[in-house]
Amino acid sequence: MHRLILLASLLFPAIATAADCSLPTTLDQRRFTNLSDPLYAPDNPNAGRMVQLSFAGNQYRLDILGTDLRIGGSYRYQRLAPHVAEIQMTEAHPAGPAHYTLLLSCQTDHQGRFIYTQHDGPIAPRQRQNSGRWTLQP
Image (cartoon, rainbow, N blue to C red):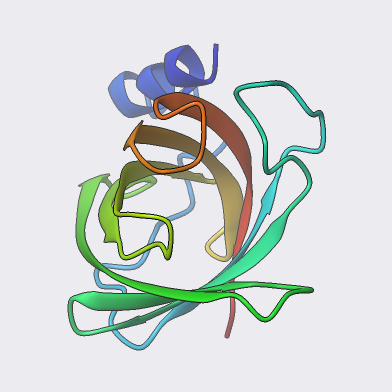
């Protein structure tokens, strides 16, 4: 359902409520705080988890808030439209590499929704999808 909403906002921005917001053109030196949707399901083992993503160059650091876990990785950012963007991420997770995508849609210039799609990773299920909210820090 989220993909349909994002696709509709991409194809028909005039009818989307988020059409008057925009995502940054680059993530270099930017920081996001993300909150995964709180409903636990087998394909959402990190339900309700809050993380902070810090970007520098083509590298990022993921801090899982409330824990001592910090994970690094590389990313590629692409704006698909002013209000929709994709981050392709490769993470050096301690249990093994993870490859995932964050699809971002803004509701304001500093907040919006994301869809997380893990293509492969060490935490089961290896392929999964969930969603949540992102906030861009000033």
